[in-house]
Image 1 (cartoon, rainbow, N blue to C red):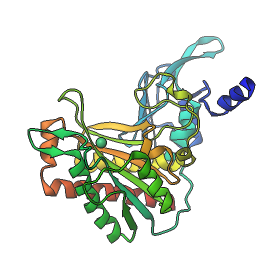
Image 2 (image 1 turned 30 degrees about the vertical axis):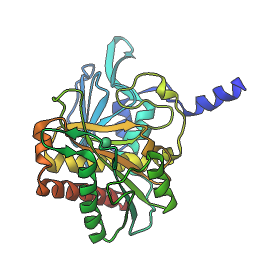
Image 3 (image 1 turned 90 degrees about the vertical axis):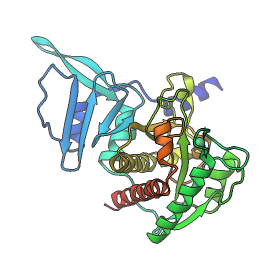
Image 4 (image 1 turned 90 degrees about the horizontal axis):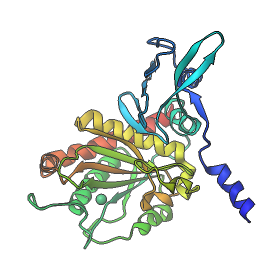
Amino acid sequence: MRILLLLVLATVVCRADEIWLGESMARLGFSNNPPVREGQEERFERNNPRAVVVAERDKDSITINGIRVDMERAVRAKAFKVKGQPDVIRLTIERCDYEKILVPLLWGAPAGSRKPLRIVIDPGHGGKDSGAVNVALNLQEKNLTLDVAKRLAILLRQSGHEVLLTRSTDTAVELSERSKFANQVKADLFLSLHFNAGPTNKARGIETYWLTPGGQHSTKDSGNAGATAQLPGNAFDALNINLAYEIQRALITSLGSTDRGTRRARWVVLKDLKCPGVLIESAFLSDITEARIYTQDAARQRLAQTIASGVAAYEAKLRR
Ligand SMILES: [Zn+2]
């Protein structure tokens, strides 16, 4: 029994297997430009006509076209032996980050969804669960998510998609029921909408989450949660990262807010999905400046438009 368990774990956990970024990027068609001085790699930059990739020593994220993508492990500096010369220091990443992040984002993800898409929008919270609250502005997360969901539904329908909501009124819906609903209606895409709150009033910015790949760690979690094996939603890892990245990129580019990263977490609403899905934390209601923005209809409309443009970018990428 124990041997069987070990075998299962061995197939899902991220192997401690570092690879040199320079070589892996060359494999993805990125040129060595601008040149990096041998033996001096602290900051790594490569580009091709479609993307600029930047990695920095000891950072647990990379940026692709300026958008932050959180990884399983930090970028590390490793000494490589060169015969008759001093060691060369090169930056490395884990092979699982290459396979789960760089390859799907830079090389492409599997296409093949029906068009138009059937999209389920999930307005976070509802009913007695108000979510984050800004008392001074009388703002409740559950109302904002529902308002933006309805605006987003109109926009996505205008683009020809079929759209369903996990709730269209101020009612409580269990977390597990939300993904179950998406699975029952055979959704092609799932978008969970949320607004954030921090322990202090200082946190600001946007986070878009994809389901943490099997055997890996979620953002800011270095504990043993990385032992979690494949979940049903992990069947869509390559699509999940593309969807999360394109939505985060659209939001950061057009709203000009702080980029808190394309993050990884095992949210209940994402775990059991039978389609690609993401969870979006659009702004911090605990921050008076960000919260005040979303008291305005125009800002909520712009947020919905931006999420819709992220979905369009994702679709366009898969068609390529
Ligand atoms: Zn929430």
